[in-house]
Structure formats: C-alpha cells, structure tokens
Image (cartoon, rainbow, N blue to C red; front, side):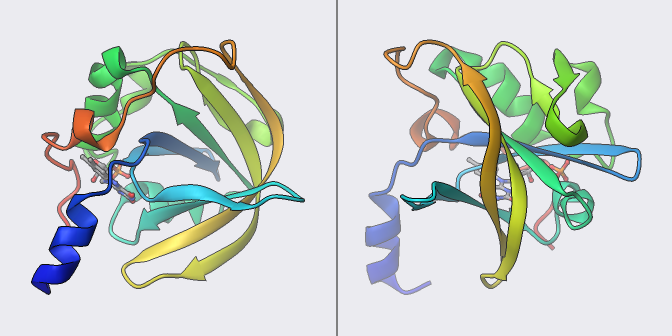
Length: 163
Ligand SMILES: Cc1cc2nc3c(=O)[nH]c(=O)nc-3n(C[C@H](O)[C@H](O)[C@H](O)COP(=O)(O)O)c2cc1C
C-alpha cells in the first residue's frame, strides 16, 4: 500500500462493533471496524462486511442486521467474533443472545445496539456496505463510559483468512 495512506489510515481509531446476521435458519456475526453513520435525517448507518467472511455470506440473504457496541473490558467478546470464524465454531454458544426484531440476533450485555433493515448493499472493493435503517435499539445509559475501539482490538488475529 502507498506509504501516505499507511500514515493516514494508521491515525484512525474507529469504534468497533459486532455485526450479526440471521437468514435461512443460519446465524453469523463478526467484529467490524469499518462502519459509520451515513445519514442524519433519516438516520442511516452503514457496516462493511468482507466478502470472505461467513457473516457476509449469511448477511447477503438477511433482511435485518444487528449492530452492537462493546465496552473496552469486553475484549473477550471481540475475540470471539473477530478471532474465530463461524465456518469452524458456533460463536453463539459462547455469548448470551436473544431474538430481536425480524429474527435479528441481539447480543445481551453490550453497551448499545440496534437492529437495522438492510436498505442497500454497496460494492466497496473487497468489502460490501450494508446500509441500515434502524428499527429497534437499546443499551445502557447514553452517558455511559467509553466503547471498545480499534486500539483495543488491533492485536486480535482475524478469524477468517482474507484469501
Ligand atoms: C480489529 C479487527 C477489525 C475487523 N474489521 C472488519 C470489518 O470491518 N469487516 C469485516 O467484514 N471483518 C472485519 N474483521 C474480520 C472479522 O471480524 C474476522 O475475520 C471474523 O473472524 C470473521 O468471522 P466469520 O467468518 O464468522 O464471519 C476485523 C477483525 C479485526 C480483528
């Protein structure tokens, strides 16, 4: 990669989220660093899923995705979703979860979460952006503490090989 972009990208420290998908009786979820709000009114949020991940393969057919923010102390949960692949393990045996709106998989014990209807899937290169319209949400008090960021998670080895 061009050195200049290394310098730019190295300065970023985004909030991490766990994105879950359910479709056709399958559940999947992975740790995501590429995400942001992308519209004010109406509120829209986009999450970018790598085409190689199992989560992407399930999300392709999902009507809803759930997006969760973790506390910095929840690195263990980040390791489950970012350091393991659902191709090999059932991540949902390792965390508490419940069914949410439209059958979305909502993790318990997180800082904040929402379920969004998938409005569009956008080709971004080797990741696909899922543009979400929030339909259900919850979490702890908005004045809560910090959330898990890339700096807290960058030593996690991605669970799914990139090629
Ligand atoms: C710090 C970090 C950031 C990541 N960001 C993303 C991301 O933005 N999008 C994505 O699809 N995967 C991302 N991953 C990779 C997946 O979380 C990881 O490969 C996961 O094991 C895939 O699980 P799955 O095959 O069950 O979907 C990230 C991993 C780490 C450790």
